[in-house]
Image (cartoon, rainbow, N blue to C red):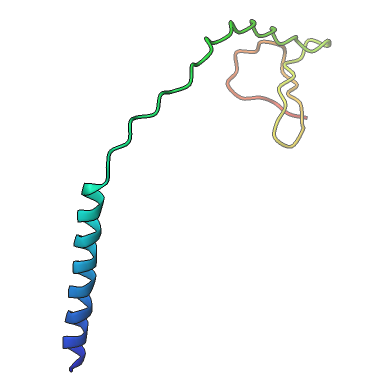
Length: 83
């Protein structure tokens, strides 16, 4: 038996096994769909507290490395100034 004949035989065996498995899967009885457990209605979310401005009138935005913005509270600038 050559290498190609062995590969063809393995492929045919794998195909036969796959078709047999598919045929068995079609004959298995269908199970009834599971009923979903009841879901509680969502709770009314409490309004988030307004972020308090820093006591010194600064923006107070914190950067990833822990620095704090030194611009005035509620500034219109898009960027922050850290110190």
